[in-house]
Length: 79
Image (tube, rainbow, N blue to C red; front, side, top):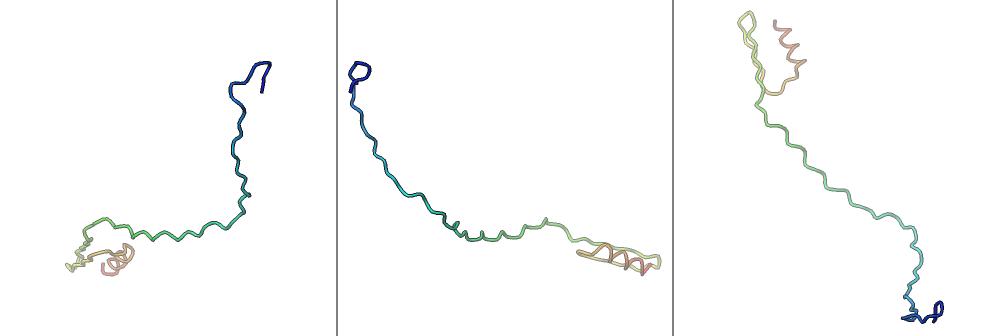
């Protein structure tokens, strides 16, 4: 081959081409659900102790987790 009157240093070559059919639309892969996470560890706390000395001298002692509304009702009933 000659380009503009001068010889080309290397002859032209071809590049191999592979023709493949277009991919078809397929269903997305089914992923297995991840393993459930363990429940979060709660903060380490000292159990609550509520001790009320009533005017009559009686003592009311509540230990552990107590609903504040329930404790208020009980104290109100005994006061």
